[in-house]
Amino acid sequence: MSALAFCIVALVLVGPVPALLARASWPLRAPRAAIVLWQAIALAAVLSAFSAGIAIASRLFVPGPDGRPTATLTSEIAVLGWPLWTLYVIVFALTLMIGARLIVAVLQVAVATRRRRARHRMVVDLVGMSRDAVPTPVRRPSGLRILGVAQPMAYCLPGVRSSRVVVSEGALTTLSEAEIAAILTHEHAHLRARHDLVLEMFTTVHTAFPRFVRSGSALDAVRLLIELLADDAAVRVAGPTPLARALVACAGGHTPSGALAAGGPTTVVRVQRLCGEGNSLSLAVAAYTAAAAILVVPTVALAVPWLTELHRLFSH
Image (tube, rainbow, N blue to C red; front, side, top):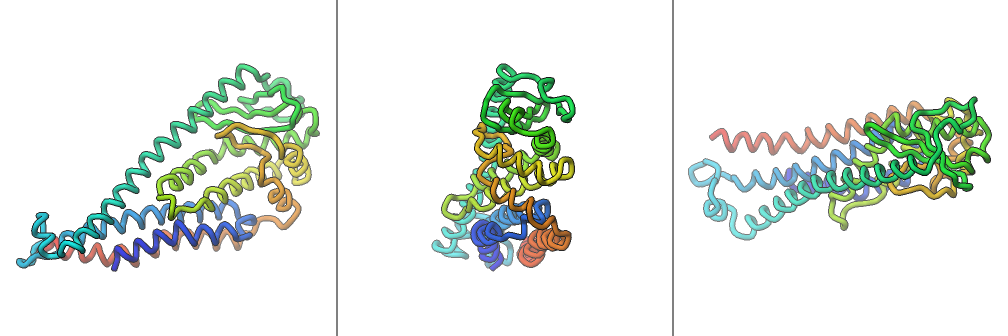
């Protein structure tokens, strides 16, 4: 029953729950807490999937005629029977496959993303101008590069040792000083908080789970939420109106894969949020509480029974 319960929890956490949360509007008023909730859901889904496999594996060591756990292939089959033994082995193998896919996904996403960013950093260093070209009243972050592009755009390329904030000449000539300050603060907030690592985590989990059960809702929602966090940082420096104008101006800018852009398809939602209510402390507290419950309650309710049974089995 514990294995079945773990399977159900894992399937619910990678399917219906992300779909429902992605359609909710309250995360717009508590973006940081909502990201923590998304992280708790993803972690609980992975733990539940592995726990299901471990619970299944523990059933392969059922007590034999002498009361001791079965330890050989023939004794396991003799106690369980071919159909049940085959089912347990298949489920356990699927769990190991998910674990292997998770490890492979971590390596693939990390390597591919860092290669793209390193290549593009090299390009902007070659063709871009230095930060000295930005108007003096505006705070000029290190690693700033200016591209000779007429279309307004701004994005950042995170990195462990070297990161870049890239803006176009079109943005510098179109935006006011307050709007430039807002957009640069937005991108610097991405780099300072390492939002790219949050995205990598969700991309990895999305890639690791089988296609027929995973949902893209989590990845899309987190992309929006990290933009909201960067927007909040920019509002504290320049105010909502300059940021809203800068986002609209940069909405159509084309940015490379792996970059965190100021504009993009979520611009309308973000501008509407800047014109609406602010963040809610009560919603944030509720989200943090829900995140803790998602991690703790299934662990206590489901893991303890089969761990107790496993201890009883091997204590003979």
